Image (cartoon, rainbow, N blue to C red; front, side, top):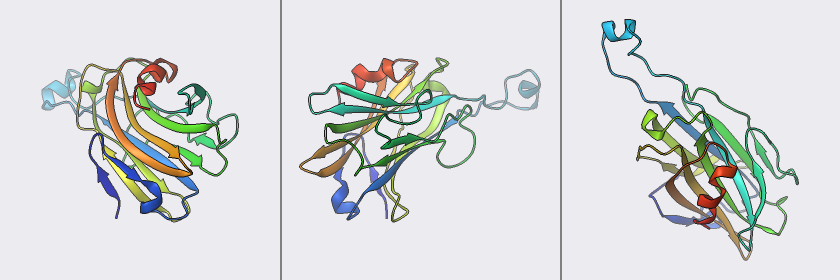
Length: 196
């Protein structure tokens, strides 16, 4: 059974899934459902709008220097170890809206930390978002290892969701859930560095 992480909680991935080699970070969200009856629907006040959030993976070395970024404008890292599923423009539907696959064995030794972020390219705030989560899946075993559900809303346009870190060949995952502001993955690099 997957672990439901609390904000700030860290788990050892080796303890949760032996022989872990490929993982997928799934990120999902929904537009806030607007309240209103029939009349407000006719007047444009009913139903939720589309929320275009972008999931990204920022790759850092041991000195906290940014090595590479995988996001909707670059769907694969230079080394090919990190691959993005592509841009979801609405957030509609159940399950993962965007996923980022990571081949842990192909990652260069210099890459010590992967920071997963979500941001609004259109500038929509997290007051317009609900049910945001990230979940880590063991691709080989096809099982969810851990999930972090974001409960806070706010006027920010980005969130540092989770961090995967490598130390002595062992990987850990930490739930972050820190608000940030920015429209692109590069805009969130400073906020991401603060959580390494």
